[in-house]
Image 1 (spheres, rainbow, N blue to C red):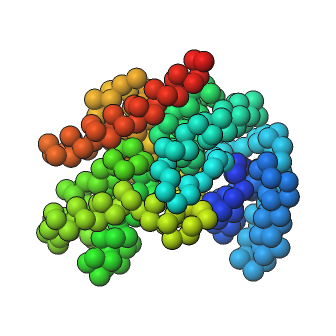
Image 2 (cartoon, helix red, strand yellow):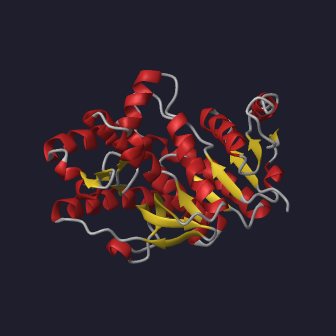
Length: 314
C-alpha cells in the first residue's frame, strides 16, 4: 500500500516544525513547498539526513512549484506573513488573503482530494476564503486554532494547579482572536470538573492570558510568532484524519445552524475528526455568560468574513 502524502505549504518555522514531527510520527511522506528558493529543499534535506537517528522511513522533499502538491492526502497551509510585535492577527488580513487565493487555486488544481488544514492568520477568515476558493466540501477544509488555544489554556491550568498538563482537558471556542471563549464548565483534570479545583476568578485570569498567548510569544520573540505549538496542533489534526481516529478536537469548522450560526461561517467548535474530515460538529451547552461571549466572538468573525466576501466579489 502506498504511503500517504502530506504537503506543507509554507516552509517557515511552523512548516519546518511540522516536517520534523511528521517524520518522527511516520504518518506519510512529506513535501515542503515555499516561494523562497532553497528554503523548502534545505529544510527537507536537513531532516532527511537525520532519518537514521530518529529513526524513520519517511521521505521528505522540497519544492518551489505548486505542482508538487499532486497526489497529496493532506495539505497544511501556513503560508503568509507572521505577526510582528504590536500587530493583531487581523492586521494580516489583506496580504494573507492574497496568498490564500493563490494557494487555494493551486490546491484545487493539483490536490482535489486532499483534506486542507489552514493555519494562516487571521484564521477564521482565511479558512473561510480557502473553502470558497477551492470549492471543496466544507468537511474537507478546516482551520487549526481550537486545538492550539485549548492546549494553551490546559498548559496554564496545569501550571496554576501544579499538575501534569496531560491530565488537563480544556475547551476554547469561537474565533481565533481576542474574543475567543474559554469554557469553565467544560474543563477538567483527570475527569475532575475544574470548578471543584479552581475558582472562576482564577480561571478568568488564565482565559485572558490564553486569548493573548500568541501576542505574548510575539512580544518575546520580537522577530516572529509561535511555531512549535501551532505546528504540533496542526499535525495532531492531520493524524486524526489520516488514521481515522474519530478524535474530538476543537477546530474552525463551517457551521450550518449549529450554535445558531449560519451563512457558511467558520468558527472554533468541537468536532469529530476522522477519515471523512469533519465528520460531525458537537454542540456544547453554554451558560448565559458563555453564550453571550460566543456570540460576540462570532460577530467579530463576521466582520472579517464580510471583508473577504467584498474582496472576492470585487
